[in-house]
Image (cartoon, rainbow, N blue to C red):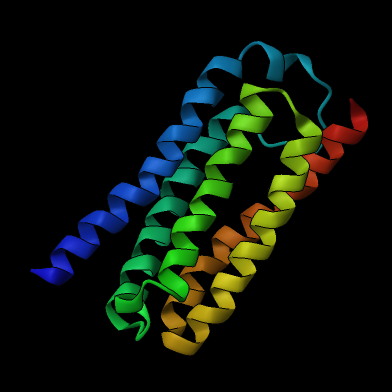
Length: 156
């Protein structure tokens, strides 16, 4: 039962962070975002939803795998709390970028997010390598998003 509950919590918390961020995206997409200058390599808007749905699923699976194996889980330190904290950075980016149109602050946030995801990957490698591989597409996407964010900041 403990494994099932951790799986459910992993899914709810991870997709919950995505849902929180999406509230701010829905308000800005089609208005402010469409009006700003974007670099040539910006994906079409329809790409973001399926990519994030897949990435949040991979993140939830990585969380569940580590949560079942991390020896520090009971003391509320280590990888799992870091994962939960990193979700705040993940959701905050959408709030800063789309909600407040604070492109520079979002750029700082995504820099921290890149570092946090890298740290998660390195920590997961010590516990269960599968989680590291599951987080790799997320890391690559966040790096791409950081480059996109910097480019948008520069162009606007």
